[in-house]
Image (cartoon, rainbow over all chains, first blue to last red; front, side):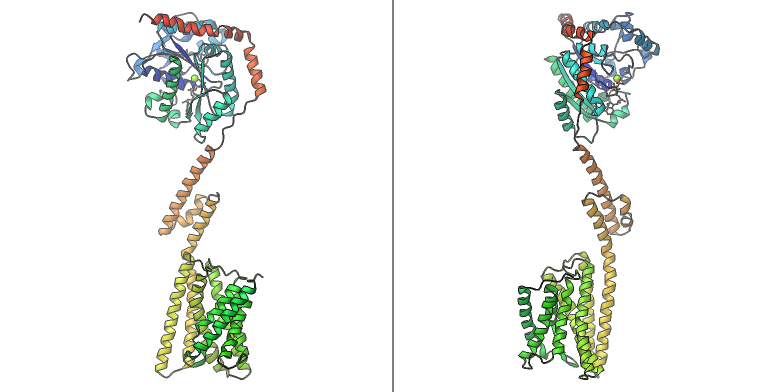
Length: 256
Length: 352
Ligand SMILES: Nc1ncnc2c1ncn2[C@@H]1O[C@H](COP(=O)(O)OP(=O)(O)OP(=O)(O)O)[C@@H](O)[C@H]1O
Ligand SMILES: [Mg+2]
């Protein structure tokens, strides 16, 4: 059985792609068969974290949604990029096209939303996945609602910033409406000046939702600036430890 | 003007001291200074002065004047043997009594110590200047005798006694706080005092062997007292130089304590010194900087994160999303979709 984990945030730039990429690597290292799918069609970017330039990505999610190829053709195995994974672990990446014409066509013509859901299912079957990680476009629209609805676990990323509060509340309540089985909030880019434990308490009482982690704003992460996967670059970093805990929490629900 | 309250307790105390003073005057009656059968070696003069410092001018006056009269009475000369001198003794006790009014005590700073010295100098000179002036004016003593046989012996010895004994007495009554500033001052004060006394007593010894001259002896006395005063003035400057940077550093620290952290630049005059104090000030500046930064961080940490959600907007947004047809449709099939995702994978995986 494949567990779908969506990483979502109402606002952009909260750290969804970073979180999703790091979790994907951590899962694969634990021997899981993982696919990370970039559904942020208007502004894709997760491939950059793996150092993949768009030219090397032959087929994309766009091609699948246009009915031009089966979804497995859009998946690229990138297990080899990360040393030290147990032999059973596999990491696949489904990228969205960064081609401006492709993006424009997608925005203009749209696509059959049901194909996306079917794509998840097919991918899970084709690649015999344990985990399907979905990196989403921020906000709430038809695709993100679908991804949320399909999720076994929704990880809502938020920044402790008043611009994020209202949208996070909306995301959380929408997911509740859709009866998403598991949900947690990941607070990212927390200012060092705020006490993480207090942030956790406040967020948990406000949204009545568990907080998976409070990750501080980190210059190391910032400097890496989407040029790599943090947990691979800094295996001993405290943030890596935090992300490992998040991964463990997500796996618990997978096993449940 | 605020002066020490004169009450029953201080009256009782001044009367007791008056008795002691009177008896001491009788006992010291034979300890004369050379050339002066009138001014005895009388350390007890500090008693009325001390009473004055403790209980104010009235108490000081009573113990001085009454004690003096008692002394005459005990030695059989009668209470009013020398009323003008009794008055002078009273004034000698009264003048230091303005210590409270002049904010001298408790002595914690250089300024108050200097004020004390001024009071003591006044107390050992002015009353006796009046008394000897009176004696000279009434023709009881020729001016030269009045000056060299009366005034100067009394003034010099009383001043030395006062300078010598009043500080320890104040210390005993916890009216003298011995911090670095006062300690520096005291060290110089006593060093000078002992030098002056030694010089003068040396003069006394030498002159008593050769042809003895009272005038020269007391002129020497005047010179030594002058040296004492000038020396003390210098010591003041000196100890101020030692303590001034400490005090300004303390002032900066005080402000930091009260939460008004001084700017780093304010330390520069101190930290720029090439001596040990410059080193200390530099460290102090850096420490304060570190403390301030740390405090800033901690202060922000205790800032509470407040999350405010506009509930009516929230409900409206939520309703707008959930009332859309595609949402209702999605909601209806969400569970099935999730199961559909799980089931096929399971069946596919089963054979492997
Ligand atoms: N904890 C952190 N500390 C500092 N910088 C961070 C942190 N997390 C993420 N970032 C930085 O924030 C930027 C945005 O991150 P990311 O692309 O993962 O966000 P996103 O939510 O996927 O954005 P978008 O909505 O545009 O897809 C990146 O440059 C990333 O390096
Ligand atoms: Mg992203």
